[in-house]
Length: 222
Image 1 (spheres, helix red, strand yellow):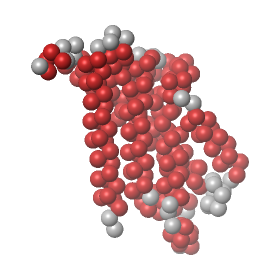
Image 2: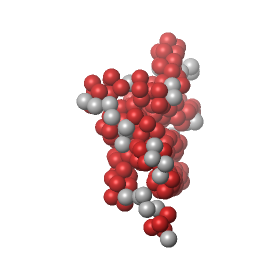
Image 3: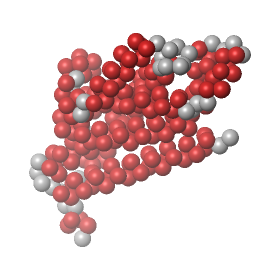
């Protein structure tokens, strides 16, 4: 019965698409964190009342972050195609999808980092300053450890968001489950292929969210 319902589904092709999605996901998440974390720290440090308060720097950086966050991902992919091709040699496929994924997600994650750091008790920061800690030490010894649960939650939210972005990258031939769903599920009206890809994406999101929640609970314990 199941074979009759899903007769258009090629397990090998679905497996390859799943692998492509996972590749896009872990690479884009890694570069998003590497880029978004320092941007978020800088946003926090230069904001009003913080140790590197600088209105001009904060305003300019905030504007750039807000602009990138406001552009719909599908449009952003098209806009950065020349940059993507210059950077990785192609604007399609798995490798061609990673730069726009990072450009879209890094500003989002940077805001989550800024919010997480704002939750740190100012008294802890003041105590570190009173003991002669440098700005670098305050960041790495105080801010990041104290905000670790919130940062992990932010990474989880960003990763889940990237799952949907990887699916949307299929619109421009980005590969992965999104590309499979569009080529077969949408263009060829193969509903069974569409259902399988959606189910896999749902399972992936559930696993990522569960893992993230458990890590938050673990690192929240005093």
